[in-house]
Image (cartoon, rainbow, N blue to C red; front, side, top):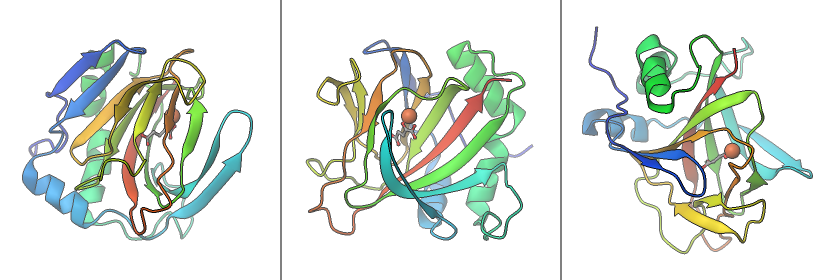
Length: 208
Ligand SMILES: O=C(O)CCC(=O)C(=O)O
Ligand SMILES: [Fe+2]
């Protein structure tokens, strides 16, 4: 078996404003460089939605499971194929189960990537009940402060009620168990931030 690409060794357990985990040094340098260099550009689709529970406008591509359409089969670089294979495999699933204590033994897993450009944001929400836990990984080599784009962990459904703020910096991420009070949002990427794109991936474990 090859050396694992994804490590959950460097994790802090956090309790405010709800239970979550902050992950650092997820990848070794060589794998990180390869993933950064080949972050998917092709096959992403604009998603917009405005409603009572969520509002957003950003680009999305599902990497797993594939639905077999031409678009989702757009060529994926080798480092990303390796990433998907690993996070959909048994060792990573077992590590997430050990960390969170959640019953993720046999549910479906989804993997996707996102690009949030200028003005993109995600309004306060708790994730859908079918999600047990989501690992969000960030892929920005640098992220300027004061340009928006932080993940906001909220004390309530109000975007003003920011308890923690997590910049989307490469080789860090968060694991968010879904809960009734796990309110979070992504701060709008400022209009002034021309050319800046917030890059992330998600691994979502759903109920079996
Ligand atoms: O990208 C992030 O930091 C959070 C995204 C999120 O909450 C979601 O897609 O449900
Ligand atoms: Fe979310």
